[in-house]
Each structure stands twice: as C-alpha cells, then as structure tokens.
Image (cartoon, rainbow, N blue to C red):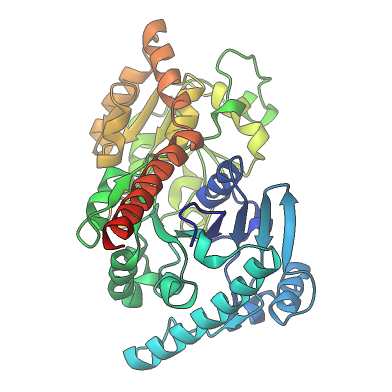
Length: 410
C-alpha cells in the first residue's frame, strides 16, 4: 500500500451547489492546488425530500439520490463533487438508542457505498486516500469500517453538540467519532482543547478568510441605502440569528446613545424579525447583500462589531467576520470570548452593555496609522493556505510514523 495519498476525500456538511461560503468549500479548493480532491455532498434524507420536492433543486437532488444522472461532476482539473446515490433515514427524533444506532449505521453504509463507487470510477483507491470530515459526526463514526482510508481526519469548526438538532445523539456519538479519527483539526484553541479529551492529536489550525477581496486602501463607492444614514455608524455584517447574536445587548447599545446609528447588514431569522430592534429609530436593517458588495458597506461604517451571544454553542467559535473587518482597516468591537484573544490588541473587547459603550467610544477615536496597518496584516495572515500547511504537517508526521513502525515490524 502506498504511503502517500493520491487524493483527498472531503465529506462536507453543506452542498457545493449552494455556495454558502463554508470552510469545507474553501479547504477543498486549497487542497486541490496540490492534489486531486473529491468534495462529497451530504446524503439526502427522507425529511428533506418532502421539504424540497417542490423546488427544482430538490427534484434534482432526489433524482441523483435514486441513481439517475451524473453523481460525480468535475469542477476543475483537480476537483470533483460527488452527490451520494443514497437516501438516509431521518432518525434524529428517535429516542431509542438501539434503533437509532442500527439506522445510523445503515445510513452510513449507503453513503460510503456510493462514495466507494465514485472513488473507483475516478481511478483512485480508497485505501490510498485521506478523508477530511467536516463535522459529519454521525456518518464519520463508520469511516474506517466502510471506507478504510489511508488516514481519517475530523474537523471541528463549531460546538455542534450544543445545537438542539445534534445534542441528544451527537453528545455521545461525536466523542466516539473523534476518538476513532487519526487526527482532529479545529478552527479555535477552545474547540481543539475540547477534542483533546478524546483524541490527543487535536490541533488548532486557525481560520482562513478570503481577504483578497477586502482592500482597505481602495476607495469603494458608498452604497445608496447606507448613504442616507447619519454618522457615526456602528455596524454588523453577517447572518442575523438570535442563536448567536445578543439581541438584548444590541437594544441596550442602541438606547445608550441615540446618536449612534446601529446598522445591521444581512439576512434575518425569525428572532430578529420579531425583535423590538425594528422599533428603535437608530437601528437600521439593510438586508442581504452579495459578497462582492460587502467591502463597500464595511468601508463606510465607522465602527464594526460582533455582538456575539456567549453560550455553549458559540463560546468556541472563530469569528470569521473579524478578519473581514480588520482587513478593511476598520476599528472593531467584539464580545470577549476565548477565540477573540488571538486578535488582541487589534480589537476592543467588551462584555455587556456598559462594556460595549466604552469600547465603542474608544473605537470612535482617531485611528493610529501603525495600529491600523498592524490590524490589516493580522487579518491578511489568516489564510486557507496556512491552515492546509498545518494539516499536511500532521499528515506527514502520521505517515512517517506508520512507515517507521512497519519497518521495525518487518
């Protein structure tokens, strides 16, 4: 058996076609710069069929799941996307552990059966491939049993077991999946520390960010919907969800100083839609924007913020938007969490409304040119290339150790 991988198999949480800007997609592209990569979409489950059957995308996914159509599509010379030709049982609601375990393994068997077929069609061998699992904990439990890859890596970018969907079964299954993997990679020190309880080879590889599209020295046109809002503008750019952002904190900050214009840019989920923020005069909702528009909005804010809600789900999060803010040279205020320590001294950290008020006042002061440039360089240093280099270093160490053991045995 070769001791050098011929391909990377990236098992993803999100479909490639949806293009939601996931870490897995970015990593797949970076991996593909040096070797062939197969990005694997999640399998379709019965519940999703009923939810999506009326959409063109849902019907397309169902046809592929049933075995009709091209399941493996070439994206570039070294990158392919595979959609599993299998349908998973929707079992998260089951309280019976034994029944859940039986059906979960059955789901995994179908998933890996389709994946092995795709690997064979590409002319690769699964035993010469490295699997990189993007937090697909339930499927990942059976990676070595049904795929038997050269190496199996597990990637943690969120404390998913605190999410209601994953909590009941994930809290017992993810530790098993972590223990079975050859190495664990996380995008924050907090998550790596948590994983180390079950697998000693757990490494914080940081986070990449597409900072090339953010040019602090370029003069972007001011968006028309932002131009009508007075200064100072204190803004947040990203998905507005009550699971991760502190709505009460935002209300208190807005009311603390009516002259501050709180600008919220991004799609809203139900908790934000129903919040009293919409009744506060100095709070402005500008809705969703295309990624290419974000540099313009960020540049014309006076202060950027990340009013994160601190709970078990979010405490280990790497706040990717901080890199975007800093890359644009913007004064930044964020909730003080373990993951934010790495951004010091380039951000103002705060806890609670009083802390935010003081931090925003400090951030509104004239910027020091040297400090601004240091913050930009900090953000620009967080690249996917840097993340992948650390993964390859661990891979090389594991393969070298394995070869050494074989040599001793022989």
